[in-house]
Length: 282
Ligand SMILES: [Zn+2]
Image (tube, rainbow, N blue to C red; front, side, top):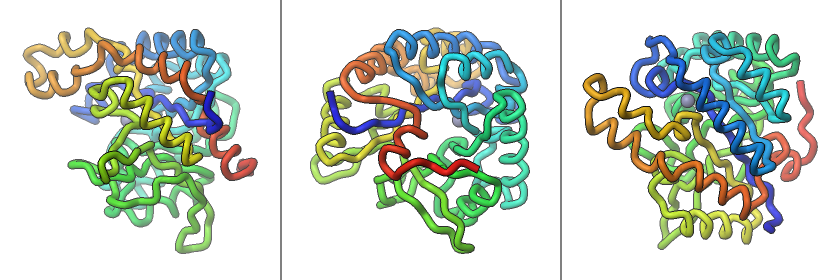
C-alpha cells in the first residue's frame, strides 16, 4: 500500500448537455450512472469528491442526498457547464454563487471546492482564482497542467499548492494528475488517456507519483460507467464523436476498481489536508 493519498473525483453531469450542447436539457441517464458509481465506490471501500453540476442537482436532488449519505464529499461543478473562458468575471461569479447556494441548501454543508467545466480555468481566465476565492471557495481543481487542444496550461506546477491571488487572497490549486514518461509530461488522471491507456501503465504512473510523494487528482464522470450511451445517439451525433467518446468505456469501471485496490484514494479535501494541513473552511 502506498503512502500518498491521491484524490478521486466525479464530475456529476449529463454527457450530451456537458459535451455537445450546454443549452440542452439533461437526460435521465446520469441518474442511473451516478448510482452505479456510488455502488462501485462502496464496494471498493473508497470515499470520493463529487463535483456536482447545479443543473444536475436541480434535476435530481435525491442523488445529491445519496452522495452525502454515503459519506462522500460534495463540491461544486458550477451551475450551467459553460466554459469559464466563455464567461465574463461577473457571469462566472453568478454561476458560482448559484451552484454554491443550491448545493448548500441540498447538503446542509458549506461548499468550498470547485471544478470548472472542461478544465476551462487557464491563461484566458486570469481572474478566475480571484473570483473563486472571493466567493468563498478554498480550493480549486480546474487546471490541467498540460496544454491539450481545448484546455490546459503548459508547464503549470503539477503539485497541489497554495496560490496567492493579485488581491492577496489565498486559494489552493489541485491540478489533475500527470506523470513523466520518456521526457514528456503526460496526463493520467482521467479522460481519453485514462480510458485508452492499459492499466499497467496507469499503475506505473501512480507508482511514480507515490515515489516522489506527490498526490495526483483522478477525475471521471458517471457516463463513463454507461457503456451503452453512445449507441443511443446514432443518427444524432457524428460517428467520429461517438467513437471517440465511447472508446474505453467498457473497461473503465474495472480500471477504477483496480486503482482502488492498488493505491490510497480519497476525497480531495482529505488529500489536501494531508498535504497542506487542515483546511480552514469558510
Ligand atoms: Zn463537466
